[in-house]
Length: 518
Image (cartoon, rainbow, N blue to C red):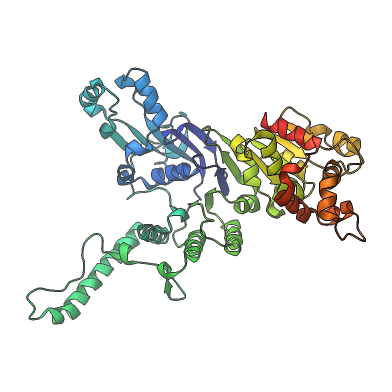
């Protein structure tokens, strides 16, 4: 079984430099938009494919890192300093001498494949002429593309050393994308020799049909009907996938995505080494997503590499398998240091917003629905900004599971304010309980008055007249406070809708908002 152990990028798209190890079975790239998740999958796809035409179709100008180009022009446009783009994938020992060598950026002996895109020295004079011109005219057209194994042996799409498929569910609307999916899966189930036989036989059958049937029709006609024989009309363009005798193109988008991903994950006749899944959650219902997660869990010997925005996929497949990227940098953070118990917790916890949490620079964690309903209003009143305008995210953890989130954040640069209840003992439940979580990046904020033991009590005591007027009418059995405690979310919502600007915000919440927004 071939495994990608490591990927190194140099001057590829948004990455001036990137280096990360990969797990043998499952790797989940998470991150916000423009963080580079898709670029990593694209890089792996390009170097494995060994397709010069694929690089040319995308365009060197769209692949070469823009910062490296700006740096080149800023340094004086010297020919010797033209940036080079490199993609390297390091493999496990595959038992193939063609793959093994030290022809890589690390200079280490390993099995591997690489793409090198660099100025073609045969055109050095032409390149220098371009560089001598005024302005910033970059010589993309004079770059060469080479695919090499680590033994310095050239390869191409016709003699690939690695079987893979890239499924991009974000492109499901595109007819070309569907044909491309089917082609990739067809290649995953056939080798080159068999495909050649199939294609030859298919062309022969078309010729037979043309002579046997269209020949009769064409008899006596001034022009002839014929079947297309171009490269755009062959076995690979005509073949499709069916389920229950229905072509995949006639299925709904969600079912199309599920079928294609499921097909790739299942055992193929020609075993795929690696399956690359770009946003597999796209167009999938909750139930289909759960089914897909189950499929991924039992993929057998395939290595699966996923780029996703889905909390469900990341959490249920295991946060320890996640590699986090950030749009503000080009390094990665692995979440494998999380405790096993916390990883299992997030697998089971519903609606945990875990990706929102790990990708946020600032987070307010609240305990329940009532706090969550009112917190945005409180924040805006105190700061004159919406939380997102200050890069603050408010997350309800659905109970007292703050420590699980804090444990997850130990290796992450997240500023966190926990807003919680003292449960009648500030010393025991706050000071003592969170003594190991005190640092300059985390604040645990609760009412220090033990009698104000929960949010509703603090809110009521700060706003007694408002609450009595709103909830006191017709009250015979329950006091206003008792009613608020039994109807937390509903009362919070009514206060938000009718009295948000009149409420006095509890001091401990004011402190947390002031601290997180500073």
